[in-house]
Image (cartoon, rainbow over all chains, first blue to last red; front, side, top):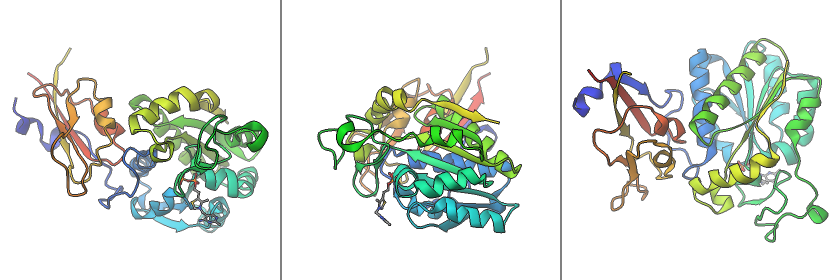
Length: 253
Length: 76
Ligand SMILES: Cc1ncc(C[n+]2csc(CCOP(=O)(O)OP(=O)(O)O)c2C)c(N)n1
């Protein structure tokens, strides 16, 4: 069988979702953001919600998400995406509304907005990219930085005495009455990607069914910020992040 | 068990040479170019083992930039 015989439309098994357009993404090679953008595009396409989805972009590396996934987007000020999404969802109750936020955005400057929107049970989905660092601004310590992890602003490693404990905002979200689905996933290999895709889809479906807020944390890598190759970053994440940020559903009602 | 033959098509200009597809391929079909780069200056993924790909699409699934298209055909 020749290559030409295999490369035929009827034999297609995988291609980039059409909703993820051809604009080259500005993310560093191997960045988890691209992976999650691709999943979101695939899910929205499979749900047939292309014309009825509104995303809210954060400040952080994903600030330009609106350039890559061809749905409607609204940009929010740093940390304020859940507040903006609240307004968008209340005005467009039949639309699928989600925020897409990094850990600096969601778990630091926007902690208040995040917790209150989730606690109000707004019918929105919060996608939380936790790479344990401020990626865009050059790899500073975030509330989610692990104990001992070295960053630009804690070059000797994070110390509890000086910097406090890493914040498990997903665990907090699971205790709130407004949330219906809270889960922690990753996208470092095929199995994890398939699970993460199911989780995001479930969150989207819950929000359309009016069940309340959902939070999907994706434990992610920032290979530039961590100063490792994409492959080594995945290994570092498996060895260090997963011990502290345990994968799986925290709440499913 | 039915045998499948696969083929990958890499959008070499979109590829950033992150190497994650190379790591994900269970049959070591892919590798980054050693000597050529794309217009952005990145080495890019290409098939280096002929007649080996079974079209499992692991490479394309893990590609963060959606650069890989995969085809799969049942071998008679
Ligand atoms: C009000 C305000 N404060 C600070 C900044 C600077 N700033 C830009 S991005 C960012 C952190 C982003 O980190 P994170 O949310 O973890 O996303 P990542 O870049 O890692 O994806 C900060 C502090 C800003 N743009 N606006």
